[in-house]
Image (cartoon, rainbow, N blue to C red; front, side, top):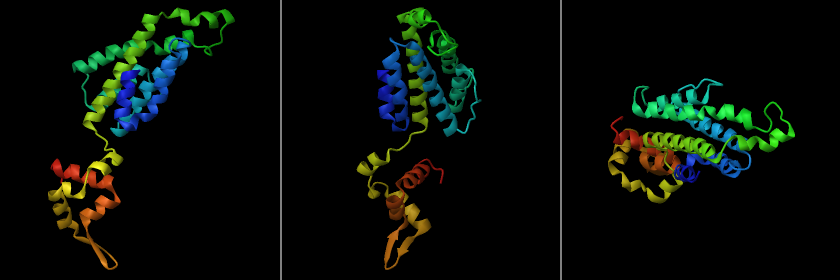
Length: 214
């Protein structure tokens, strides 16, 4: 899952997904049922986060292909667009996750000792790679597409790189509206106060100003 791990590092909001990736990489050869479970959870987590951010409800207990299709819709892709059709085809492969999990899982429905020993032999290496690679392709595409349209500003990085004087037109606009903020014997421009107190809000207002929304 090297490529997905790189994307996760690039977009910090997805950092918790690293746990899924690590489990998949650890167990893909030794206990594929655990890799399958985490592959399914990985896609579901991405799709649910996108749905939450886009205010699109994802049905509880839906099949994985349905959940992923909803996520593509939330991002803005129509059912008729090639990317949605391709993704649906890929997820159809991923739909086998549930069936495979039941077939090779150590805890599903109980198994004899012989079945436990041989369960991983039911899925050859090529099939395992196909399933995991499919999961990674979809995950990377969803995250990159979503982040392109909905960038989240890394506050620590912005604190290092952004200064108040970088956006004088916006600062003047903000100060014309809100004037100065007085604190006892001290007075500060509204833009300076917003920048210093709530950089996230400052950047959001700056973005709206640049895009002509205000």
